[in-house]
Amino acid sequence: MYLYDKITCMSIIKGIKKLFALFAAATLLFCGTGCNKIKNSIIDKFSDSPKETVRLTFPEGSTVTEIAKILEDGGVCTAEDFMEMADDANLLAEFGFEVKNLQKRTFALEGYLFPDTYDFYVGEGSSLAIGRFLTNSQEKYGALLDSCAVTGYTLDEILIIASIIQEEVGYPAEMSKVSSVLHNRLDSPQFPRLQCDATGNYLENHVAGYVTDEEYETFVEIYDTYVCKGLPAGPITNPGLDAVNAALNPADTPYYFFISDSQNNYHYAETYSEHLELCSEAGLI
Image (cartoon, rainbow, N blue to C red):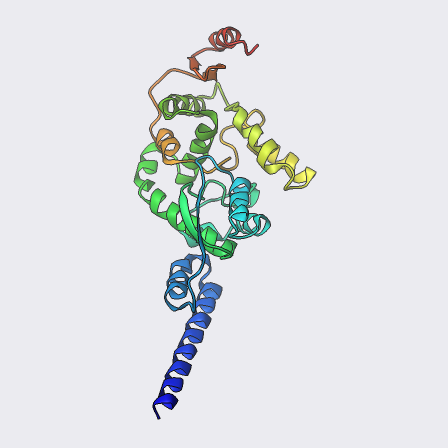
């Protein structure tokens, strides 16, 4: 009798586990990536055996293609699957991010995958991995919405500015000055183009090879700030909080130009003639 009861109880427990697994799958199917926390919790509590985990760090300024490679090397998912999901225009809306021109972007989620250290299950797949990034971004950027409103820029525009700052500046101490150059240009009809090398470098190093030649030429027209006017179509990397704060709080300067020399010292100029003189002194021309 005792043995029979024990077997019956074990069968019931296994049945419950299967039900929770089905519920988790249905949750993800109907709710999308935004329900990852629920699914993770269910898996954690009712898994038959402990799952192998991996801790991965994504440096500030990592692009979608770089993040995809780190995840693949860590055994979380394939780079191809991650990049495909990172171009899903519907995911940002699930997490409350409003972006108008997602269909024109290199990757829909570029700029919204907050660079940080994350714990993943080995083999968990791109859906859960992206859910972790977007949940973190939602928490980090949600607190900045009021600050964005004060600047007159949307959160998306601030992230675009921050992504350029992230790639143009190696030191947080210089970020607010570089930010001032970008803001000054955006506010002045005299300088309709930002003319930042980082935007062209992004296309060449992180987009070419993943798109067709025709798509690449289209991206040049709307991302390369030597070609397009104003802000590029989207962020060119996933910036850290230092760059985001600099985008929100530019220094008060009269500068419209900046360069960095071979010693990584930054120099700023108000006029084009001053800029050329600085370039000559730095050996750039």
